[in-house]
Amino acid sequence: MKIPILSLSKSSIKSSSSNSANNSSLLHSQTQTPYQHLRSLFLSLELMGNERTAAVYSSAHTRKPPSPGENTPLLGGGRPRSSQAKTFANVFISIVGAGVLGLPYAFKRTGWVMSLMMLFCIAAVTYYCMMLLVYTRRKLVADGSSEINSFGDLGFTICGSSGRMIVDILIILAQTGFCVGYLVFIGNTMSTLFNSSSKALGSDFLGASPKILYIIGCLPFQLGLNSIKSLTHLAPLSIFADVVDLGAMGVVIVEDVSVFLKNRPPVEAFGGLSVFFYGMGVAAYAFEGIAMILPLESEMKDRDQFGKILGSSMAFIAALYGGFGVLGYFAFGQETSDVITSNMGPGLLSAIVKLGLCINLFFTMPLMMNPAYEIIERRFSRGRYCVWLRWLLVVLATLVAMWVPNFTDFLSLVGSGLCCSLGFVLPAFFHLLVFKEEMGWKGWCVDLFIVVSGIVLGVAGTVSAVEQMYFAKETSSISAYKWK
Image 1: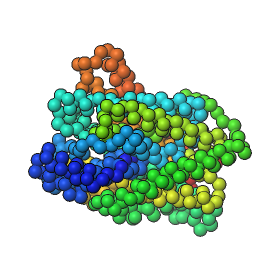
Image 2: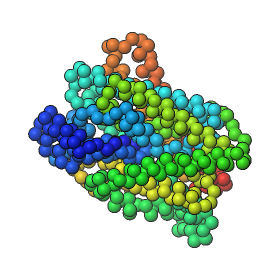
Image 3: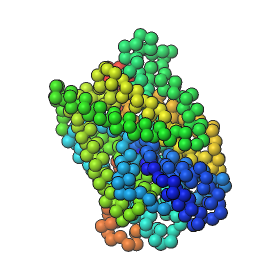
Image 4: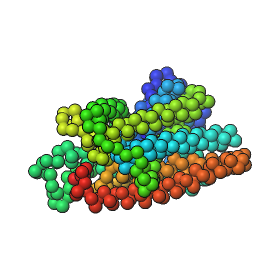
């Protein structure tokens, strides 16, 4: 999940601040300083990945002088301002991230026809569940509920403190999981770039593989980056992240087409039921971004058109994912690596793309971790900045990354265990609780089916992903795509 930001004029920022002051108490008016302007700035740029959901946007609203209470919204209010084109772009950059680089490997594991079917199915269900959140919020606001600006606010309004706690825990785990994936990507990519034929570090050093050494090497720098209180110093890097993402995809697509026209390796259409849940987990991860839907809908000028714009964005992303996955798998067949950039041959352009992605994810990690920091500091530090809590999460993420052998397998684990709960189970469950008196039996059946299916997919997908990860670890020494 990622955070969209579209630049606003100074007049619109002042108008937003003035409107907020007229409709809020003195307490709110005291916060119209850097954070109020940060909110206008951060709603429209993107902060990477399937990952950066509400990292900056959340930070801009939660940093208030008084200690926040349980019923304090995580996101502040504001006037709708995004056009349809900006909303389309915001949805795109909120969802598309580095996880797309693992799709060709998932296509290899599950078969290209089966993968396409799963991608489009997950895209449709994700869109439906996103709209369930929108309808649920609209119903509660129409019934007189207080301002609801985030997923956590919605959970609190419907289920009280327990609802917010469940959402908060899932967001903490999901955001931390995304960052673990980033570290795994960095460690694996750097080791293949510099240690594939190196005599100095080509083999284990003091019992640790080059991948682990690179991950450990990131730790002191990440501790420093994650200690930064204000995200304004890191915001410009989000532009770099978008450019690198799109540039890498473009280079890989050109490379895929060139290789496919020369080699045309054999491919499989169906991978069998044994990898069904694995593929569904990867697809769920790829479309994760539901936590940004309510803020995006709030910021749109014509909210009645939000469903149409969201549907168009999801259809475009699904087509992009499908084409990217098919081209990658068709180009390299059974030699497709779990990160498609690993299949790129030696050369300056290939090295630049890989290094750019590593640098991108390295600086994106503190942005991705920020939602978790906001929640933990809110609960354990009365909303005040606490460096040791941040360092604790960074160290835990680093330790987990050291034991993850495969990037795409870990995507499936996060997608199954966390994204299914956030993207499918909770939206349908909240919708059912709010509309239970108004829905007919068909509506009940649809919501219950999504809840049950999401739980089954989450449990089965988690088991499948764990099995694949252990399998990859056991066979890494003889695999064609080693991660040392």
